[in-house]
Image 1: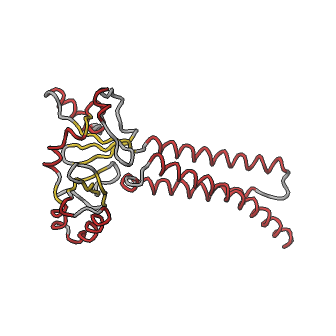
Image 2: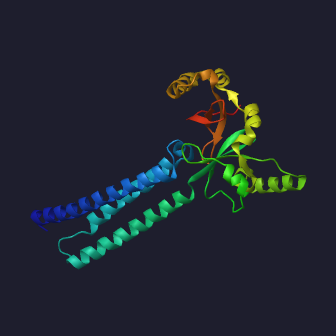
Image 3: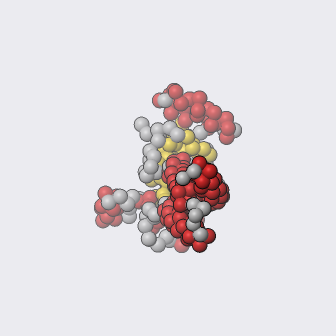
Length: 259
């Protein structure tokens, strides 16, 4: 094959691959916007680790498609053959992207539940199919990120306690059971007893003092007025939620809050 023919093939393949890359980039940008604007509020996205998962999904989808196009696109093929190849590549890409986005949608955070001594981020695929008391449901409010703020009630009897313990050993904690949810306000005294002053955390982890003071300054709240609780998800145990005097979450910091 002559050098001229090779350059012609390379230019032809590069043109198709570049066009494919631009289309992929637009779809990827739309997917990122969808995930972070609707399903994963920015304030909790780092805690559930969605950024890395979405990043891998987007990179693989954006890179693999155009590479396949570069390999398959040849000027010797008829238009019908070219479009058939591109349609197959696009179908595989869209199928993989669709499955990935559906998985992210199914695992989106829907609630933050106060459970014993911590706040737990509960995802949609963790919520058990239990009926929520309609009265309680009307009393449950959402925070600024759109997540339901709830607390977890205590078992009503020894039998219920044993049942709950058995479910927890199977990976279903009370925070995942809507029938155990109640308004966060009803746990005010429990939260007051469990939450600790941020000053305690600074004393325990002095290397984090600057970060905590910077966060307090950003919120415009004196650091002496802030308390904290560990904020956990299935992907991370090393975050805290900063609380004001009304138990409202006013900030989140990547620090281990357990003693």
